[in-house]
Length: 580
Image (cartoon, rainbow, N blue to C red):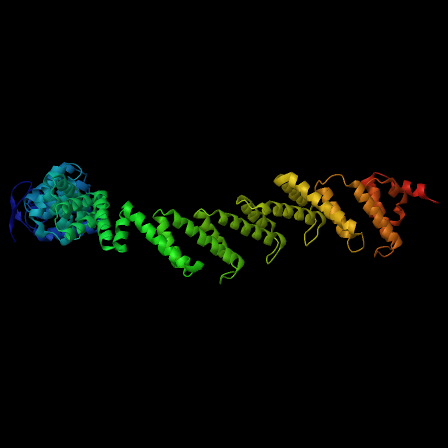
């Protein structure tokens, strides 16, 4: 047992008592800590337990009592609580006072806390506290050491750039994420040395910045290598420096190096060195190399007029063309065009392959080949016919149209008429529902209008062509084998605007009616069919046909069709012909 003085009345009493027997003052936990009844270490442990439980008020009271007794850790803890407002009303000024007291007593965590606090408020003060941390660096863990060096490097100004570089370098060695900052400062240092014409040192800093991903280092680095190369007497060393400068796109270095390579190439007759000079933009080298490549291509392409190694020839001509050789471009165009023709026709060891042919023609067109343009037009026209007529493909007018239009754009003279015929065929297929098509008058008229929009005059000419075919067959003699074809040609000619063919159709229908009536020219006698064709002539307004037509021999549908086309009542005809 020990005697203590009462905080209230000052009289002595036993430390075991709960309250002062003299004035009844109750001893608090804080009093016990302040009076030394509770051990400091135990009190700290008690405060930490309160924090873990979230009882910050109790923790604050305990820390405050310990702080009054001069406990460094308690001062640090209470400073943090006041800064954050944990368990007590936030009071930054008071918190800073406690942290400063702890830091001045050697608490490294307080120093770090103060350094971080002042980062956004006062960079100079922050820098001072980070320096205090640096003085106690061994007290921190490795990752925290890295962060301290990082912040010192960032806060340090360029007036002390060497120190800044040192800090950031150490931070990077300790694993801190300072790659961007370190690269930036190395670049600035390198550029500064370059301005001072200290090329050797400048190169080292700039190269490090480049290694760290700073692409802005390229241009000054190229300048460094160029300036260093200028001073060298040894030719090999000079070339090496100029080569490095060229890699960083230094134009002056490229020019000097290209001239050196060109001289060496001419002296040693080296194509490899000539290529280096050409790559670096030496115009003399480019011209000479282009000629060499074109000649090599020509040697491979046409010895004795035969192509030996197409791929190798294309390779040489392409290289020459890329260097600006016009003759090589023409040769390349000729090769691609010929390959296109070979794939199209299946010649010179090539199998027919329209896809390969198309690509070759396109390549030739890129090279300026007029022939290839015409050939590609022919190929597209062939594709159009394939889809229009269903040759080795399903009939597809949309695809046919696409290829015919491509062919037309390439100047193919047949494509327009072939497209027109595609529209015409589609019109008749939908009009009459033939060839697997459903009868659709609206769709039919769409195609007819598309044909007119394409070229109305050509449409008439095609109609006249159908009329010409009909006349040619007529002159050969109308018989059962050709009358349907003549009928089709005449109808198409009329629909496509060949002119007024009413008289021709009337004469044709009356003649077919006669042949069916008498069974002539291969026709089997049939009064019904004879009457059908007489009706067709009557529908076109022929008076003789109107008298001879027998509506009684037709179905109701046939009569209605007749009345619709002629406007004549079949009953009236029946009465007028009765008894005749």
